[in-house]
Image (tube, rainbow, N blue to C red; front, side, top):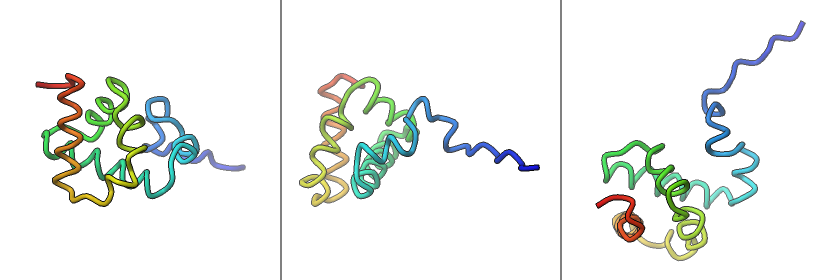
Length: 98
């Protein structure tokens, strides 16, 4: 008798983020790592969770898919401070916070 595998906690938010396959189909591994880098560093600066920032960049705006990922080639050559400031400024322009 085969045991049922335990549910992977990381996959419990599949409905929210898409399946790992869907995410991988949308972007390269480098773009995915860059997106995580951006989300986590913006979250740290704003003192929010990564999940909260992810929602702001995807559900309340299209900043991640409409700006961060398409601009990967030029953005990833900048330093962390520039990238974080740039994304936060865009979030302000979208009125995601004051």
